[in-house]
Amino acid sequence: MTMSAGHLIVKTLEAHGISRVYAVPGESYLDVLDGLHDSSIHTVVTRHEGGAGFMALAEGRLGQTPGIAMVTRGPGAANAMIAIHTAWQDATAMVLFVGLIPLADRGRDSFQEFSLGGWFSTTAKGVFVLDDEHQAGDLVARALRLASTGRPGPVVVGLPEDVLVRLTESPLPALLPLPTSAPSAASLDALATALASAQRPVIIAGGDDWETHTSVALADFAAAAHVPVLADWRAYDVINHESPAYAGWLGYGRAERTVQALNDADLLIFIGCTRSDVLSEGYKAALNTPTIVVSTDAELIGHAGRIDAHLSVSPAELVTALPQGGTVRGTRGPAWMDTQRAQQLAFSRPGPDGGTGVDLGIAFEALEAALDPDRILTYGAGNATLWGHRYLSHHGPKSLVGPRNGAMGLAVPAAVAASIMYPGRHVVAICGDGDFFMNAQELAVSFAHGGTPLVIVADNGIFGTIVAHQQNHYPQRPSGTAMENPNFAQWIQSFGGHGEFVETTADFAPALERALASGKPAVLHLKTDPSTMGPGTVAHHELATR
Ligand SMILES: CC(=O)[C@](C)(O)C(=O)O
Image 1 (spheres, protein in one colour):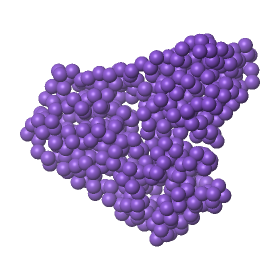
Image 2 (cartoon, protein in one colour):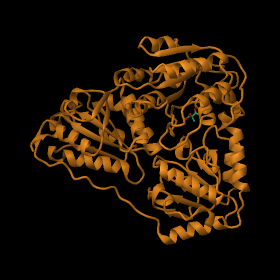
Image 3 (tube, protein in one colour):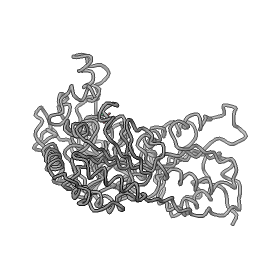
């Protein structure tokens, strides 16, 4: 069948199971937009390309296909860059389509021209340009595949506007199954032997590649084998927090004890993640501990320190092939795991922070109790996220989106996308005031597409993480870290949403109940104490020195 390259791109996306694209329109890719007009794909128009990119990232993390964003030429690509960096560092599958200037105008510094490869090549798995209309389908199929295989990540595809309208008779590309593998009997034996002789093993699980049954299999195995499981930074949803093996998480704001567990361990098994900069506390913790890594990334990008074995399989391929946990206990009793677990339960038990305004320690206890177990939580960056990390629980995979690269502005667009994807589930963005207003505009998209996210904004009027660093290095000289905020409750009300301005701790729980019952996109604007830098025992100086 004859069709334009732009339409063939849309047909290929449909055939690959893509159900939504997140787009800021541009005249450079009109033909793709035209193809979307009659497509089963739902086009979610966002208000900023950073929002489109972050929503695609959320789709890639919470769904079954890479997330798709579409933007136009230099300005659009520039705005979308933050999501590509995040998807790269976080290892999340997404494809960014960028409409480009016509081929004939190339190299003349024509209107909005830029170098796609120059901008993205160091932070994407691949950068392709469609220079031949007959390749349109194959290029899209290749981009989707590359985004998902090995270490997942972002792929960028440039679409010159004149190539998009050319006609082609190329057929839809065949759907290629993704590669599968299985751990060898020898590597499983070696893993079992190492586990059976370890007294203090720890499993560290992370990445996006978890489903309910694989997460349950991991939890069952670990509990029976008496091995505590720690979650990677902002991958806390890899395991049900009610599992007796779940022992907390690593990364900024972590319990001291989780790092201690790494340092005390005599065997570390990383599944779906690596001993990264953040996990190793800046390339310091447990670098020389006997280590088994389970990852489909042959290069193990970002891994620091010792490796005794690398099983090149996915978490699913490993955990469904594991022996019964009870067979690899050796002489290890439950004490090591139980101690870690007990300490995690204590760490995650909310308590008051003190200070003025809304006490987040108390508010988050109410939040944890009010949310359904299948809640989806989204985060941006900043100290405000730490209350959620510490006090809110996950009960299964694909229920968290947070920037492992520390990118601000992710929480709102991720929540909007999550709520469009999963209507009826509680979706809550946990934001500081800095993070919230970096991409707050994307809440407008919820009104157009039916999502009902709740945003909790902890407004202390400062970029708190940076103030914590300043207190450590330049005491009593805060500089460049203050903000003036509008009333965010009135702001969301002006859209037709539910907004409440909450100034006292006692007012929080009733406001939360009303927000969840409202059936509308909602913002709870909490005034909080700028001198409270983090939850509970996370002291100012401790965050600042990390
Ligand atoms: C704690 C902090 O602000 C970080 C590390 O930048 C983040 O939240 O990503």
